[in-house]
Image 1 (cartoon, rainbow, N blue to C red):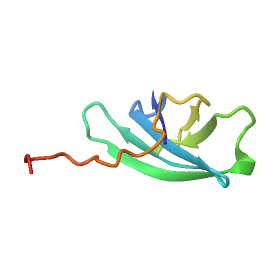
Image 2: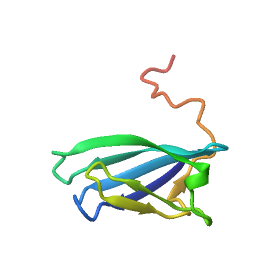
Image 3: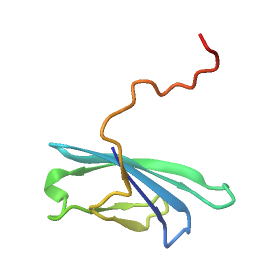
Length: 92
């Protein structure tokens, strides 16, 4: 999983873009939220491999419609899912 964070220049919301790559292309989700939390929504997206530009990076639309350029280099990468993601509330 790759993670990107930015701010939408149109709606001014904070944006989180999470993606994964496969032979078919890139699939992921975009989540946005406003500073006062009155906006908190998102959308899924898929970009077929044939539509990806050479050199990485891609564009996807914010929920408000503004196109967001996502650079090839992510802000963070998770290579595999942690097998134990649950919070333990007791010592059992």
